[in-house]
Amino acid sequence: MRPTSLVLLIIITLTACEEVIQIDINDADPQIVIEANISDQTGWNYTYITKSTDFYNPNEYIKVTNAEIIISDDSGDKETLTEVEPGVYRTKSLIGQKGKSYSIETSLDGRVFYARTTIPETIKIDSVNYKLNNNFRNKNKESYEIHCYFTDPPGIKNYARLKIYKNGKQIDGIFVYDDRLTDGNRIDYSRFRFGDEDNKIELGDEVKIELMSIDEQTYNYFNTLSDVLASGGGGMGSVAPGNPTTNWQNGALGYFGGYSLDSITFTIYK
Image 1 (spheres, rainbow, N blue to C red):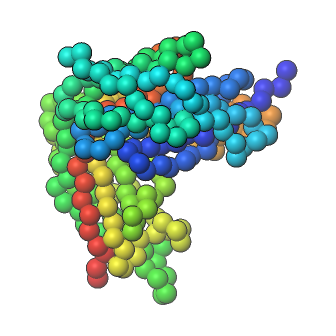
Image 2 (spheres, rainbow, N blue to C red; image 1 turned 60 degrees about the vertical axis):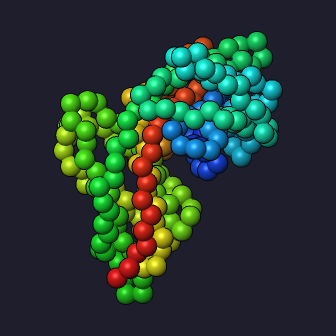
């Protein structure tokens, strides 16, 4: 029997910002996808629930409604999320605390999905720098590569995800870091090199970098998701390369991730 590929629309979200990434998933039946976050930042924490759909309808996905979602901490404090639009749920007043662990319980159609996460201490941005990106330089326009410097806290495992924005819009890509080989070092994170017209950074652009300290499970999710996307996925009649790792129990895809945040905003000048 010929295997078929289905399409999963991963909505990578933190607070109100959405980035939709389409990948093939390695499953024969539609799967529940839950992407939930909790942070130490003021404002709402969002959870998105979708269901994977058919390969032959790649631009369609199902937003899952009427779920009951409860987030609780180890002290017994808990909050039930409110559905604010189909498939989108948010907290009312819950703000995460660094060093605390959180559990989430999602009840849906007679099934209950569980996950846990911890909010790590914040890795601080030391400084940023930028220079001409000679790989994408031409006589009409110049593109700049961005360097973000931070010091890895020594003696503990550290994981991070970085996001970069150009003039208020998030640039596509998954940028993650772990300190397996760099414990305690000063890090020059220099993967921000963009040559396409939409994303390349030019004179006068306002750039924002977010350095999100995450736990190991969240890192594993985004790291494997990056690998899946880089592999190009499957195609009609082909086998997809596999699903990203997940910390959900009872069969859901996606992740529940805690993070603390440091950020910096600057403008590109000559």
